[in-house]
Amino acid sequence: MAPEIDSFILFLATERGLSSAYQLSVRRSLETLADWAANEGATTWQAIDTRCLQEFLSRQKQRGLEASSLRIAIVHIRIFFRFLVHRDFLSEDPSEPLLSPRTGSSLPETLQVSQVVQILDSIDTSKPLGRRDLAILELFYSSGLRLAEVCSIRLETLDLDDGFLRVTGKGNKTRIVPVGGRASTALKDYLQNERSNLIKSRSSSEIFLSVRGGPLSPDRVRQIVKQRASQAGLSQKIYPHLLRHSFATHLLQNGADLRVIQELLGHADISTTQIYTHVDEQRLRKVHRAYHPRA
Image (cartoon, rainbow, N blue to C red; front, side, top):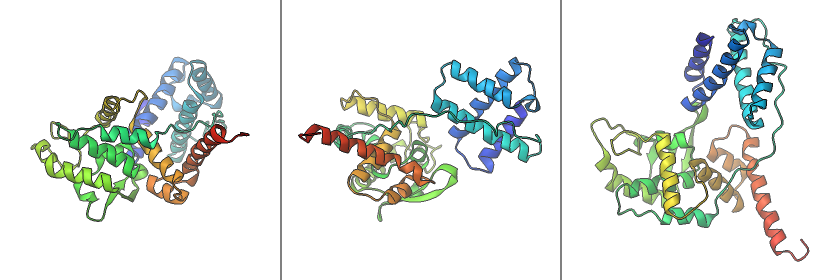
């Protein structure tokens, strides 16, 4: 069953332009299904029917897989079987009748403005890698970038004179995002005074480099964000996407139009962006309850 998975992952990479992280997530879902099916005696994709898929998902739920993770697995299974049907490997799609489990309306975590400032102000740029790390965190919060986008931006995509950055996001879609004043200052300082010290023979034009001269990996950037937040005295778990959530929420709280936020975040669908309106409503309810005499 592995060759079909490999073909599908190649399709996602070459024809859909989806990220390596997404490809890995899909592969895990399909390999988990294939392993389970093989243990049940189904050694080909033709041998898997709707009942088999329902049983697999039921077992996954019994093992403690959350509804949100089940929804993701179902999406992966559906697009895979559609691919097999489209390529005439299967005559019918057994995943079509599958229903996605309902999930609670969980809201994204966000930081307060004061917490973001606390992290940024705590970074000592006179110490090694201080300029680089400050530029990374300023850019996350200034432009609402995804982790993969920060790792992949290159010198030729940055225009600090006009304060814009060209970003290639999900689905290989390109968008232009503004770079805030503080982030521009931090980037200029890093590029002029620190990046040249990190350049090695193997270095390319990625903006953010490791001490070995190569581009920073997503895991390393996660570690940088976590370490800098801890050094700033924040006990809350801080991760790159939390800064992206905070970017969007703080824009909305200060009156930004939801369509503009959608464009800045690179969301294909406005419904994805609308979750931030619920975050803002939650803040309004909290303030109302705290200060209104008859709340």
